[in-house]
Length: 129
Image 1 (tube, rainbow, N blue to C red):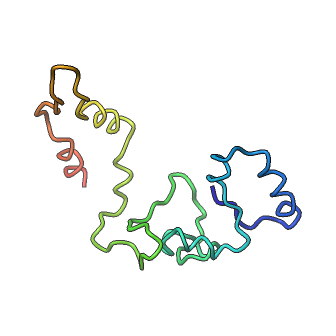
Image 2: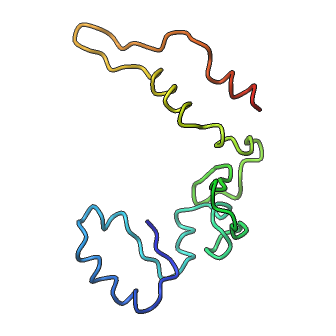
C-alpha cells in the first residue's frame, strides 16, 4: 500500500506505527513524503494529476476507471491498439469458467489433463465487442 499526502503529525507517528507491524507487513506499506515517488513504480497515465501523473482526477470511483496498459513505470502512455474497457468483460462467472477449464495437476500415474474442447470463451467476448 502506498500512503500519500499524510499530515505532518501522522508522519511523525509513522515510525511508531511501523514498529508494531511484522516484517512482511512493513514490506507492503510505503509512506511517501513526496507523491512524485509514485512515478518510480507506476506509469504516469495510470496516476491522477494530484499524484504526479498525467490522468485527470477521478470523480467517479465505481466501477474503477482502468486505463489500458502498459503499466510499468517507464511507459509513455496507454497502448493505442488496446481495446477500451476490456476489463468490464471479466465477470465473476467468466473467472469461474476460466478456473474450471484450467489444466489440473498430474496425479500419480497420470499426466496433466487439459480442458476438453468446449465452446471457446473468447467467442463470447468477441461477439460482445
